[in-house]
Image 1 (cartoon, rainbow, N blue to C red):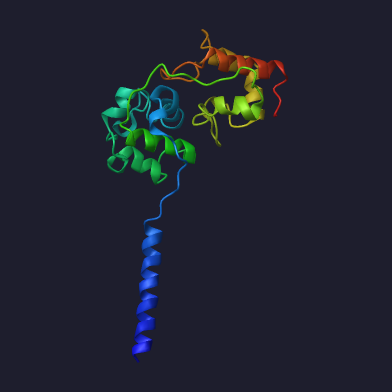
Image 2 (image 1 turned 120 degrees about the vertical axis):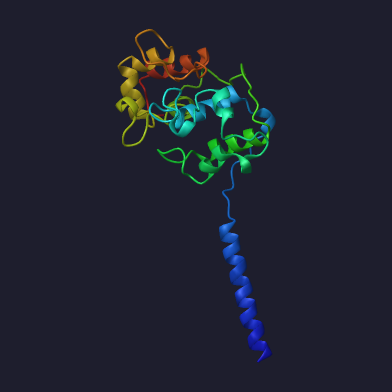
Length: 218
């Protein structure tokens, strides 16, 4: 009888631990060194691309009172510097309810969580590592376009421009709109928008070289 009770108790105990483990399970995010994060270079493009779209959390609409288009507005509500667990912005990113077009990548989430934990500092004028001789789609162009796919991807991309694939980027590149936008020339929609730092000369050179090389999916 005692042996049966012990077995039943052990089963219940193990089952309890199993469910506790499941309920407390969190995603293992890629490691990011907090000291290396720069807000302007690493964080703002994520918010602008994924959250500050027109009609959502941009400077004009401010859906639900949130504006993710610049540092001051981002810090005004939803961020507790040094404490991601008490930051509402991180909570909705972590549970997948924001952004509405789909979850950010695990790397993007890691950047935001680590940035908050490290004090949510306003780093500006940061060095952007770039090699203008690297201009294949996979190694160069796709990484640049990742700043834009929050708006320009999915089933209903902004302006009907999908920048999530080489085919989509090629289409807008051959029309001349891509270079005009990233150079922020008059008559073109600036990209990235909302006061985000303009692409570096090196990044624009990468795009030009990719276009001149035939817009290959390489």
